[in-house]
Image (cartoon, rainbow, N blue to C red; front, side):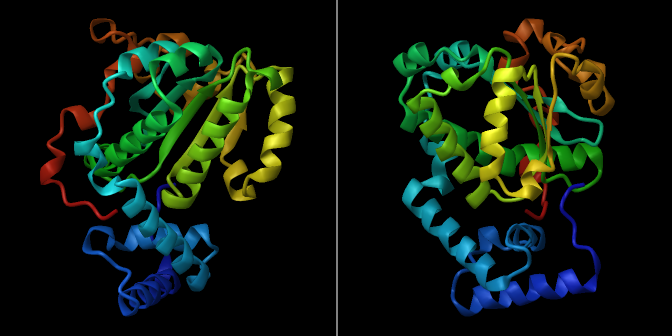
Length: 276
C-alpha cells in the first residue's frame, strides 16, 4: 500500500519528528509534509534520531548535487542514444494507480552506452527522472486514482544477465543509484518484478540480497520466463507493453519505453496540491 499515517501513535511520531527538525532549523517548506516525514521515519524503524541523521544527509546531498533545480537545469541531450543502448522508461500505471517503471537490463550495451554518455551524466538523468516522479507523476497518479500515490512499481528484465554482465562500470553505477534511491528517496518502491531470471542471475541475486534491507527484499519478486500471468494480475493488458505480454505498443511514439505514457501527461499537475 502507499504511505499513509495509521493511527494516533504514528501521527504523534511524525509531529515529534517535525518539531525536532524545526528546532534544529532542518525543515524547509518544500520538504514539509506528513507523508514525506513518515517515509523517513519508516526507513529508520521510527527511530527519530536516526531519521534526523538520514534527513540531514538528504538535505546536504540535495545541496551538493543541485537536486532542487535539476529538472530545469539539466539537459540530457543524449537521451535517445542512451535509450537505444539501455531501454528503460515509465509506462502507464498498475491496477492500484501506481506508475510503472521498466528497465531491460539484459539489453544494455555497456560499451555503446559509455560512448553516448558518462556515468556521472547518467546518474544525473536518473535523479532528474526521480524528481519528475515526485513533482509530476505521483501527484497526477494520485488525482487519477483518487487516492494518495507515493510509490511505484518497477519491472526489471534481466534476460541473459549473469555475473559476467556486471563489469566494474556497471557495478559502480548500480551501487551509486541504489544508494541514492535508498538514502534520499526512501519508501518509494511499492513492488519490483525481476523477470526472465535465469540461473546466472539467480546466483547473482543470492549474493546481492545479503546487502539489502529485508524490508526491501520482501517487495522484490524474482520470476523466470513464465512471468506474464503475474504481471497481468497487477497491470491491465492495455497498460502493459506487448514485449511483456500486454497489448500496448505506443506505435506512434517510438515504442512504449519512449512514450512516457501515463496520467502525468494529461493532467495539469501544477494546480494539484498533494502532500509529499
